[in-house]
Length: 357
Ligand SMILES: [Zn+2]
Image (cartoon, rainbow, N blue to C red):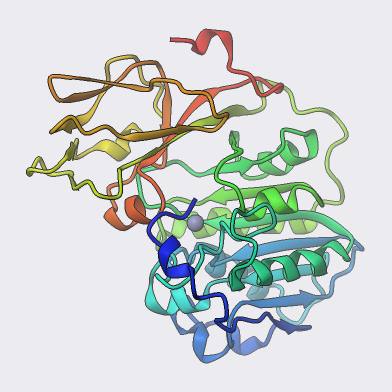
């Protein structure tokens, strides 16, 4: 699901990249900001930290170099627990240190660190080999749960993502909040690989650099560290707002786009990201297209559904949908996508009847 980086990856298979391993967390790292980690760590690093209970919490941070909320959160948690034994063992994976140095999601020469986990379409890249090693090590531990911490670029609420609607995955997601997104695409993500081993979620903590996101991630980590076991009862339909990603929306690689009304193949509305998580009706406009250009809409289940119609150059929703991660960040659009389209689902993964528009 990487877009522009595919070409750069080919021929880069011999780039050396190896996993560094540590059996303690040096106090010196407690105050190091993400862009400075390269001075202290040689590359992607796995810390195995002891704890009282038997089952370990697996945490991954900085899979995207410019999303530092997870790193700030684990620093704060470990600082609070400094000099004490952790409530349970922690396996901490600190991912893309080179991209963090550059302040970007992924370097042009790299395979996206959250598209390289087992299940990826590119299993022979150096990044994929590192993730295979991390999963092999993790699979040998007794695991309690896995949490992968991210930020995004648009106006979004905090929410958890799951790749499995089983009760323990949803119980873990509930520790973060009641908005839970189930997704199958893109593949090669951390939470999909870890969901085969233990309850696993990805959490989206809003934009980087916002204190509320760090505080929320700290709460989640501390809750997962102190929870003895997940509640035995099933998660009820009223306890969560369960949504499913049905389509990924991309701007064609050769197309131009703008948000300020200036001339481009796609002139999106300037408040596009304020549509995120709103239940939109048929006819809501995303902006205008010229020259007959069309957005690329790939549905997760392979079926072709028309999500947009184009009349008089206006891009309008052709069916009801709930967008997520619509972004005004051109780099995010080029490296990842314009955003996702979701629908409310029941526990069986099917769209709720009242959502059909
Ligand atoms: Zn991310």
